Image 1 (cartoon, rainbow, N blue to C red):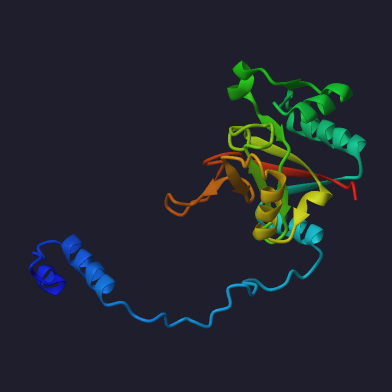
Image 2 (cartoon, one colour; image 1 turned 180 degrees about the vertical axis):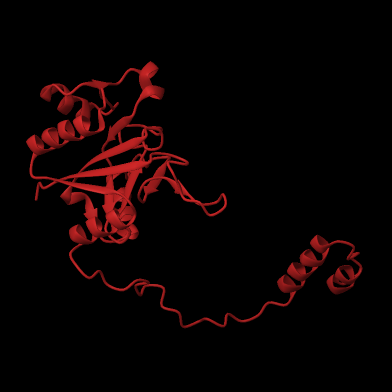
Length: 223
């Protein structure tokens, strides 16, 4: 019976792929000791946040191109939505989230939730799961009643969140997700960091390439 080394040496090295596969097989045969035995995987990767998570979130959200709107209470949410709608000349907001719809309906703000109107929406409103201070990111999932499409489709994505939803790091948000959805974990989790953008074509920045060109976070101070 031929040895493994003889079999490997007999492989025809006619293509780059075959050469790479030979190196992989040789590496599997001659295993080396791990040169990084003393790594502490529990130590933090990033430096500590310079300020409290709520402030860091706002700073990093704006750095990423997002807009922050502070709301002292529910009344302030309504007033800011009305002002934004007036400034942008929007006819209505679109939402499929029952809590958001109840808020809009009770305040008389025009809205749509008709599936046939989905592709015509200019401004969509959703809630979220967490706000991540480190990157100014919004964590959303299919566990929120807005579903999957609302986070990516509208030209302007408006997120209504609570100050209590701010966490320092991604790991904190994931731990919170595990706790919140312990019995029915969402099949989709997405991190949104600022408006959609790309500079792949000739290094020219294009906003709204793969999703909303504007992102607003309305943070309610319920602390």
